[in-house]
Length: 542
Image (cartoon, rainbow, N blue to C red; front, side, top):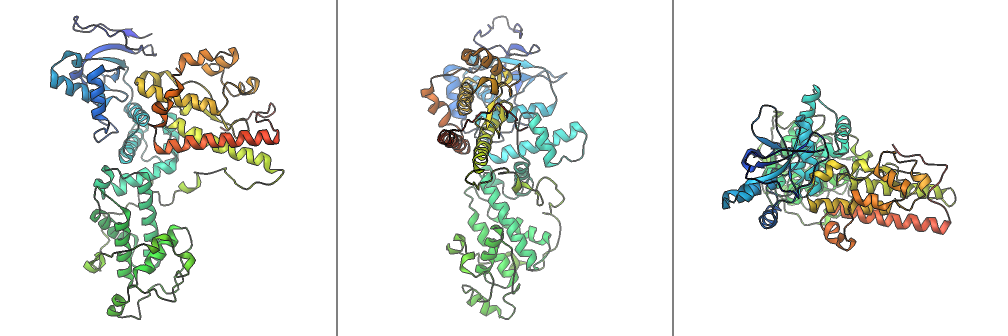
């Protein structure tokens, strides 16, 4: 039961509409906004794009949810414990602008002080739910969390696999491959391309840069143009040169192709084909590594548009669509400016086991278990399992992005590929504002529908559920109202406004995939007259 603490100023009244938190040690207090500070490690490093909308909403209707705060032992002020940085900034700004005490005091849930990493994970989860957090902000916060965990656990270096496990235990799931990509963004690109990253360079673009760098390094080494550190120096200078808010990968790629062509005394078209080959994962074998050895500089420049006829990569089938694009090469290359590069190690990140991840197995964990070949008879079980795996993967990603990671259990051999184990946690419901909570609840009910939560054979689905869960009790009692008490179901006619139009493009696609797989699996089962639930097989994928 939450303890109600009287405000210091007796003239201040409690806002009785403030919900009561669930933990016994929590306190509900009314505190001056000037006594609360934003979290120093707030994942959002830039102005929230929703700032003006949030300000207008608070100006009109006030704060509809209390801030969640904590107090470090011995400190006089409070600090935000789980999100709310934008809302606190808005309140302080409105109070300064108007002097209205309505904005000067705020209802807060005061939680006991916990370790620093717990606070950072709470802010990460809150920002993940609200969305619009730039990729670089999320990546930098993840590596702040890594540093805090290493300090708290007293270890020198946590591996990607260890981080994946620790993050999952703290309610913030990231695959080790995603951690590797974030490390590349933080340790390699952030020092070189801050403008591009701050202005929206996201994960897809980061992946393209990483792929380009790896392919270019391979060509550089095969052509014996220098060691790895010399290539990284060239790559770093080019990234800095083309770091602009309106970033595009083509100028960077064109400049890199010209640098390699200049150093190798060959045509940039040849280099382009070599890069395409490496990026496609095909083996790169050079018949004549230095194509221009028998040509003069004048011949090389005058015939720069001609492809050497004996080059093994000039088979038309190896030409990508990039090879057909128009191209303007930089007039002066780094190679021409300095042909004797020194190995200073300034941009050598090979010692970083997490940041660059050059030897990571990140490409092996995305689609495990999704074999697509189907045979006529024995393929029935295989086809069902494949669809279940796909449904489970979609549901798990959606759940992880909306604070519901602990609610989903994957079932590759049973039902619709997954089951909801419980309702959203009390901590999650206490932290979210009304609008975000409606979004999470709407998604929960969509997931419940896609796994046939209330219509699946009770005697089978109960084998997966732990008896203490709300879902377990609801199914035993056959009482949907019990679920509605914990996961409010607003008018489904508003789901478009509450969920579909506000979730990220990636999550929207996953939701569409989930419903498509549901239709396919159901229709296949009906057509073959095959039950999706089997009493003799209730194994779950741990």
